[in-house]
Image (cartoon, rainbow, N blue to C red; front, side):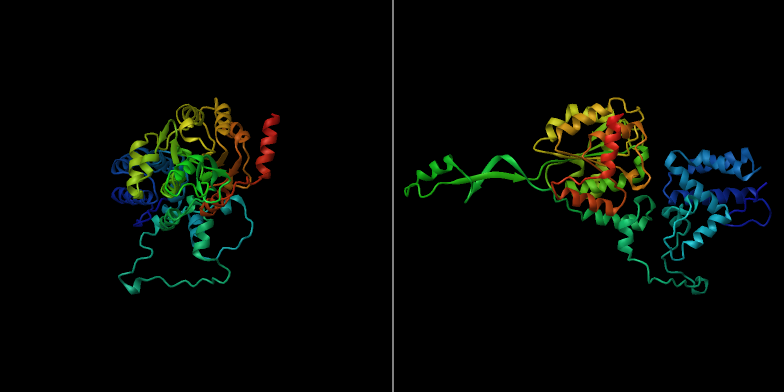
Length: 420
């Protein structure tokens, strides 16, 4: 039987007493809550009762007993697993945490060695980091790190995945996102506007000018009016995208308040128009209104059904004058991509540019294996990753020009899928 010494207050015996065990489970629940899991007092009480009922026969039984109470979604498993082994004294992961204090060298490693602890979990395990200590004698020895070959914090923040950011880094990233500007190139419209050296004569303006006492001195001219095309954002808020939803909502709020004719939609199991809510200048009020309006947060994904509703209800209203569509999703559809290819084809034909933003594309070995990915890829103009600030900057640079950037991987995938 593996011993389970508590983390917060070590017991003197091989097994902690009942009150000690309950106290340590409470502290463990606080760590999970600080790391981002939704753990309430009711779950803590159920965890204590479950451990008392199951007993402490082995570490594995204890692990799965707490797992059954504290883990409700798939994306919470990794945080819980890391927190459990660190909190209940797994020596290997404790050594890995100590190694994070040393400079990192870019040498290829195995997949298990490349796996890093969650930054939110690190902050949860070190709640007092960055605060002034009350007793100078209890201060740990200062660790000096050679920073000759390191890069600045801002550059590191640009490349860090949103999922691996600590809370302070998330706050800094949100401030950077709020300063983003989206310079979509202007396009020629069918309407005209007055111009001193226009190519066409404005007969109405010329006749009105001729009615004046001095008569017609010169012909009035006009030229085609130019303005940015509409921008439509379709954002997936299902459970598989929950780790990035907050960042994407801040991004949508920033571009909505930066320019006109921006339309934002969210979808999981249903489609929701959050454009009016995100137009509020205060980002907190805007996100609060959007959250109250959307009812399918972190649920399943029905991409085909959501696109069908968008094509039938909203496409003619918002996709005029060469609209650009940003589709933010991982392409995982629980309906098995039923009708998704037809809806993607219709959406592609209704806009001038369809850009698919997929967080999974950050992996170099990514392949479109799911049915949803195979149904969507043949009908997109660009396929880009969106997982950090650098990818958002690349998206803005791509939108700053009317030229579609050629992606060899996208072209190859589309060719293979069309052959199938």
